[in-house]
Length: 88
Image: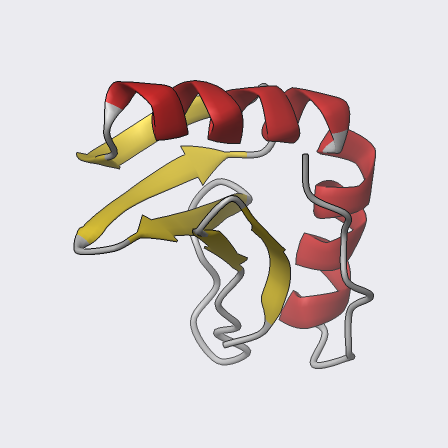
């Protein structure tokens, strides 16, 4: 599971499932014991829970890097490495 961004204690990952396609393009955000899943386009929370401040940071990051995270999604699903995306 490639780490695509790390900022302010928040880790952003995209999982690859080459034999079983995912639902919507999405990423996973982790902060301590908290975890949530977010859609890439449009940026939004699918499930899970993050503290309010970290939720706002992840949504701001997702909006700012929507194109880059979409590109990372495509690369990772194709089994190719992805570049790291800057944090906030």
